[in-house]
Image 1 (cartoon, rainbow, N blue to C red):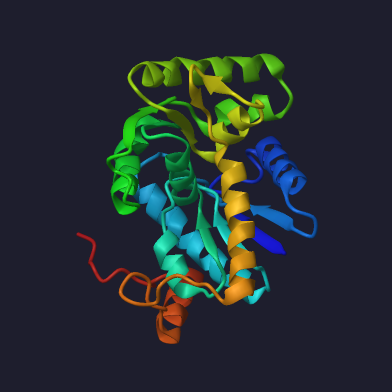
Image 2 (cartoon, rainbow, N blue to C red):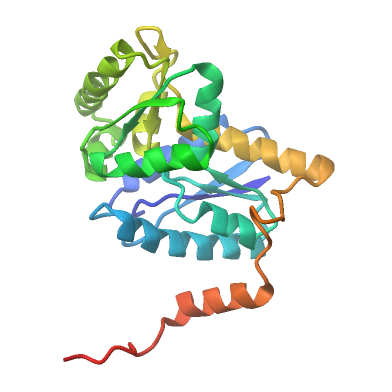
Length: 267
């Protein structure tokens, strides 16, 4: 089984993180499964909807290429899941959204879910995810670490003091959620998920901490096996109708060649 893992992080600027993520995923994968981690350049930066949209376009194009290259599944390794449904509609192999898979798994571990995201700018996006995934009534708290991806670089390069500082920053955000009624804590991002998830059995009070990287990978392995077992795919009705070949070709041509000259004249 070959899994294409699409990160929204730059492979060069965050080389230590990408190497750590690849080693971790391949270390926990089932025998016979290989996970190839790919980044995006420029990465998701200047956080906001437009950056998410730009990265989604590249991720969808990469997912289409991954299917053509013979991968068995694509994981959107970015908790906000931008472009998830569009990619599901465009390919026949399983597409796993880290946010979607993790939120549904967390809902099996507790009633009230606390999300610790990378930055407060993502708060509204996560609440919208909850609505989309039918879990809006289960998400009780969302708060940001207000950290930059580069803040994790030293942690994944082996700096134990930097790692301890980041875990402490996570704790300071998560513990008030538990006090306020959260039953389970979710690092809403693979960066904090990989950092926190490496702590075996980590809980804040009674609330377990979910490792979103592990959940996404195991969801991918499960879906590939279920697809092989009984041909399971997403509903191809109104929810996720298969994109026509022309739509896919038009999309890939736009990504490859750009739009050309702008129709809006400069003043």
